[in-house]
Length: 144
Image (cartoon, rainbow, N blue to C red; front, side, top):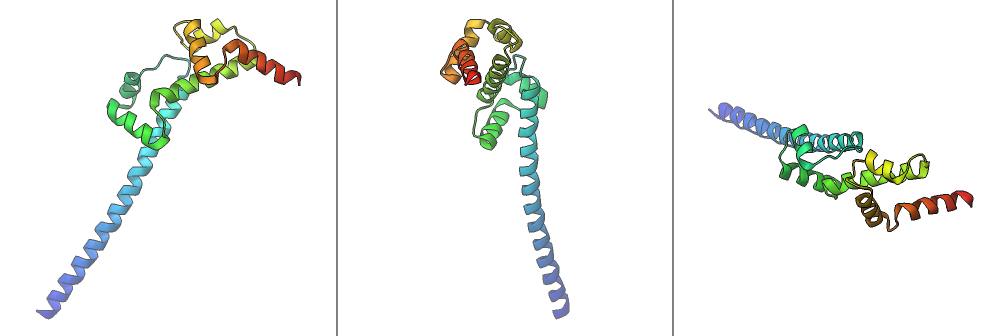
């Protein structure tokens, strides 16, 4: 009987330690998969920076609820999903302005802004400069 009890205790201890290691592994795997989701969302936003993407579009593409995707993104990046997308658009606008190939109207159309005025307002909010002022500052830096 003593031998059977020892064997039972040993098997219980082993199964408990195995479950703990599985729990640790599953939480690490879960964190990795959450990071992968955020990376996939960022790649999706970067690929579609020229489109007018909404939160619904992102949720439909990834099959997640609005609350889940917003919370996950905010937790992993420290920034809201739509504000991140708007910053991507405005960084792209800065790049296009510095290339000096397109007018502000063309840039606003390329980035799917509803009007050049709305684009200018968003740009000024983000950079504290109008697109014209930004363009002139880029040219001034190029001269120096």
